[in-house]
Length: 486
Image 1 (spheres, one colour):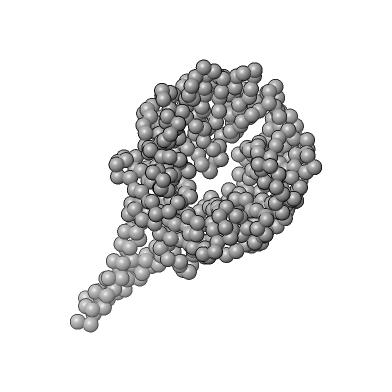
Image 2 (cartoon, rainbow, N blue to C red):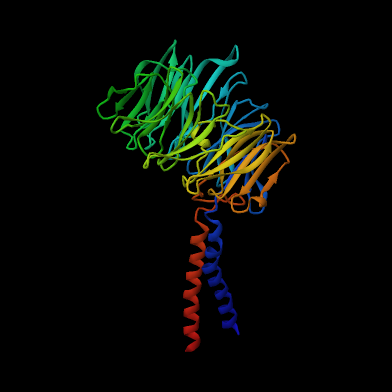
């Protein structure tokens, strides 16, 4: 009887060790979606239609912005003592769900959203100190660009300027950060080496202003920095320390959008009353004309670099239209219907891309009859369009969620703030939250280490522990049964 009880006990351990990792594997790579309100950060479970609170700040603080690291293991959080104030910077460990304060500045100063390196080991953050009232725009007496390295656990000074800093761009290897900075009316191009902690001014007298974006771009091997200055493209080689002009378009570049996985760029220039959209291959330095019209706006690359989208409008047209253009065939795949709708360009911030990860779908925000707004999905493969979410007074944000299987929209509907998740296969089974106003964003890729339900201090992965229990249980069972036969 004694041996039987021991055998049953060990057999139970063996089953736990063998089957627990298998049963729990289904949730191990489940994509997450996050939202935050004034005081807390939540993880959304769209399957259950529920929110799980991850962290909550002090009741006297308001969350002004959150930025996750690329590996999703950390998040930088900015708060203030009132709405839209940015005076405190925190670092959140998403696995342990522990938040600690990095720095705090005066309420007359501001902290911008941090910019993480591709390897998630560091981020840069811009500080504006001592606000100066100047018309419609807010300016500060000085601007500090600082670096936070996870190993050092402290902020390091990069540069101090008296005007502004823009076009921040990390190299793919996470070693360099390029940016444009203005000092005494002149913009200059800088490159900071995060290994040597050394700042280098590459050139000065740039033709740009504080609102310019995406003027700098690194080659995929991190050896060449491409830079736009007025109508021309320049390159800076890390090995030779040589800065030179490589292409002049002859016209002021108004808009530019770099591709993610190839060294190509889309540019919009102006000629007389027409806008002209070109694609440039930075390896061959060739311009390819894509479209010219009375208005061409918001060019956008698909993630695979094979398709672009853009808005265009003829001189006598009442409304804009969106076009999907394929590079291999040099043909227009689809144009959205014009009719009684007006299509608005999206923010070209790369964190809010409206292309799906598989490059097969794109989301578009449309305004109808100058009243309600709705979100439409255009399909590259099926070559059709369909309304997904409608009757919004105002849309705050819209994005692909849950590995492109869902669409999420946050906005105001019938004087209520609403967060809505819509499954593509069954749009009627949408999930809606109306308790409070959420600011939300996408996390389209599964986490390497999913966020636990509760903080965990275990250094060993649970799967390893369970398999170890199973192996030990099996060995002991074999030993016991061998003794019983004797």
